[in-house]
Image 1 (tube, rainbow, N blue to C red):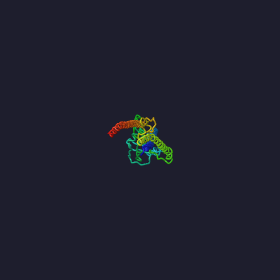
Image 2 (image 1 turned 60 degrees about the vertical axis):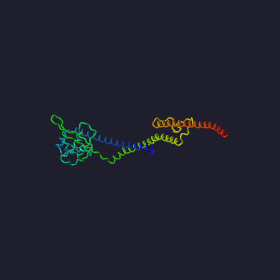
Image 3 (image 1 turned 30 degrees about the vertical axis):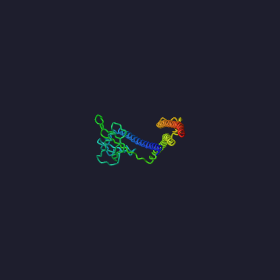
Image 4 (image 1 turned 90 degrees about the horizontal axis):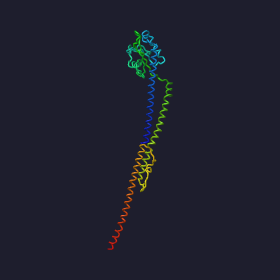
Amino acid sequence: MPVRLKIALTILVTGLLTAVGVITTVLYAFERFERESTYYRAAGFLERVVAEHVDMLGMQERFPDEFNSFLRNLVLFEPDSQLYLLGMDGRVLAMSGDAKLPDGFKVNMGPVKEASGPVPMPYVMGDDPQRMDANAVVAARVLSRKAILNQPEAAGYLYLVCHKTVLSQSSVAALQGSFVQPTLVLILIVVAVSSLLAAWVAASITRPLSQMSAAVSHITRDGLGDAQIGQTISGDAYLGLPTTVARDEFGQLNNALRSMLDALRQQWSTLRRLDHFRREGVSNLSHDLRSPLSGIHSLSEIL
């Protein structure tokens, strides 16, 4: 696989992974924001209920049959939410739902104490006694009774369970218009930008490599025969690169290759010059030796 294609695929895959990461992050942030906003709305609702009805435990003891209807009326605006009155041990005293729970049924007190504690929480996930699932945002507030000297004493909890609302067809259409389509557009933009970036990076990286590969192929094919004796040829004649190159790794490689070619050309010119001198010396020596030898040969024949 060519280097250009590898680089393009790498940048393209990186762009796709980035797009998936952005979408995942947005979905996670949206879900967290939804849970936090639900929790704060539920906590504010319980604060108002507790402030308006300061003796809910007494109301439940005095009117046990009507108290469930009272709780149901409090959450009529959000039918997916369930409101419970709990004892200190987590026992369900009253609830807004119609389901029948066993006598003495107790709620897991971990989320209840965490939601009603003094430390503010981003959100708390708990279970619904009617559904027994832990995928709901819960809120809780401590209920107290007025004792002697008006000193408040914890006597129970008001527990609110907020389930995730099931989206209707209009909500799904609104979600598609406000989230799905912009997300698809964002993915297409990221892929297009990644492709253009991949093409630009691949071209900027592979262009000098291609030029240097062509120069090496030229030298391998034709050798250094272009350099005449005493003639200086620039390395650019072989590399085909401009005189000024970038100060990056490719520029350093180009400079090193040009220095190597200059050294090879100098050595090649020196070798050719020495060979020329050797040939000229051998020719002169042969001529100088041939003249007396010819005379000696002639005298030998006369004798």
